[in-house]
Amino acid sequence: MKAVQYREIGAAPEVVTVPDPEPGPGQVLLKVTAAGVCHSDIAVMSWPADQFPYPLPLTLGHEGVGTVAALGAGVSGLTTGQSVAVYGPWGCGTCVKCAEGKENYCLRAQELGINPPGLGSPGAMAEYMIVDDPRHLVPIGDLDPVRTVPLTDAGLTPYHAIKRSLPKLVPGATAVVIGTGGLGHVAIQLLRALTAARVIALDVTEEKLDLARTVGAHEAVLSDEHAAERIRELTGGVGAQVVLDFVGATPTVATAGAAAAIDSDVTIVGIGGGALPVGFGVLPFNTTVSAPYWGSRSELAEVLDLAHAGAVDVHVETYTLDEAPLAYERLHAGKINGRAVILPQG
Image (cartoon, rainbow, N blue to C red; front, top):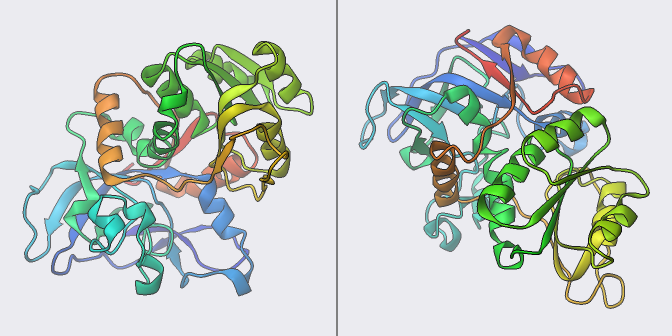
C-alpha cells in the first residue's frame, strides 16, 4: 500500500510503498477514508536528531477516519464496513486517568512506549492503518468523513480547552481566540454553539480574519503589538474572561496575558514555544494559566454529536495521498485556510 512517511531527520515527508498491515489479536484494520494534516506534524519533523523520540520511518497522520476492513481475534462490537473515527491519544487503558476515559493524560503511556498514531505509531496517512484497540474507535454514522476527520484533533482539542472554562463563559463574558486556522476556526464555532459569550478572533492576515467572521466571530482583530490594547478597548477596559491561544508563540502568549481579565482563564494550546510567566502581580488576580493536551474519549463522542447537530463544520482543503507533501509545504507557508485533509483512496 501507499503511505506518507517521515523517513530521515530534516527531510521532507515522502510517499512510499509499504507492506499491507494485518490486524493482530485485539486490533482493528481500517481502510482509511481521510487523514488530517496538522501543524504538530511539522513540529515533529523539525526536531533535531538528538531530540527525536520515535523510530524512523514514521507513517504520519494522527487524525484518521476510515471503514472497518478486518477485525483481529477477540474483537467485538464493530462490523466490517462501519465508518469510524480514530481517537488519537492512546493510553494504557488501566491507569486512573484511562479509567476516566482521559487517555490523553495516561499516567503510563511514556513508560510503556505507547504513542498516538502518526506521533510514534504508524498513522492514518496511508491506505490502511492498524488501530490498537476497538475502544479507540468512535462510529460516525452518516457524517461526511472528510469534514469529520479534523474533529478528532482540531475539534477535540479546542472542545477540551473550552469545556473546562464554561463556568466563566457566561452571558456578557468575552472569549478571545488567537489563531483562527485549523483549530481556531473550529474553536470559534464551538464557543458560539456552547456559550453566549462574545468572541474576539485574532490572526495575522485578513484572509484568516475573514474566515473567523464567516464561522461566527463577533470581532476580528489583527494580531500585532496593539492587539491586547484593542481587546481592552472592546471590553471596556476589563479584558477577556477566557483567552485561548492556538499559536503558542512568544508574541501571542504575551498578548494572551495582556488581554486577560481578573479571574480569567488563559489556555495555551498552540505549541509555538512561548511561555507565560505566572506569579503574584505578574498577571491579573486569580488568572489561571493551563496547557491542555488533546481531549478525552467521551469528549470526542460529544464533538461528533455536535457535528451531527450541525453546530460545527470544518473548512477543508482536500489532497490526494500523492499530494500530501505539497499539503505540508502549503501548511508550513501558512497557505492553508482551515484544515488540509488527505484522501488515501483518491
